[in-house]
Image 1 (cartoon, rainbow, N blue to C red):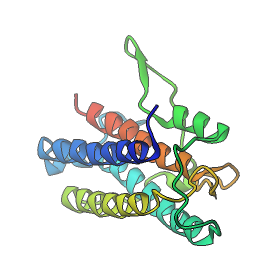
Image 2: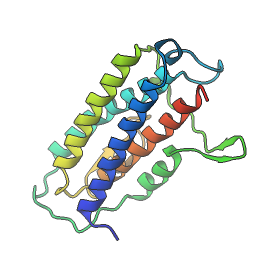
Image 3: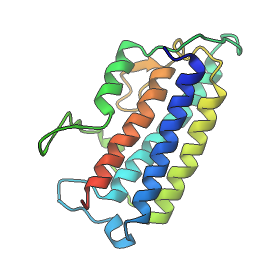
Length: 188
């Protein structure tokens, strides 16, 4: 079983992998195709990336607030972190979609406030994603010695679901990889 340090390292590696994946997608996609949908009912690459940026912009203040509100010792030294039940289920739901043949299994529609309304040029979208990844990684790395299994946040998606901060940390990269998978499929 991985220890707390390894768990955090794995989350950071997955966030870094998501950024590398987006950079590679940006390198092989021209500016014109960045904002065009290949089907009217699906998102463009720009919309997928903006949704991820909107999500990070929503989570960052929630994470900061949860860490600032935590009254436990700054040096908790947990042996390992655990997701709670809500976080476990949400993490499974928002991860990359499985396929059976050509059918994607497990599609979940986002809430209206996280549907991209504006799209930005490719370079601006990628730069914003990278900037937000840096902030997330800094927050996650800086909270490694905190009781992440005990600190709770309210989900920015609808504001009704509560889960622990470690669950939030595992949800973020899984969600990113899901929408990067979606973005990569736009022009396949």
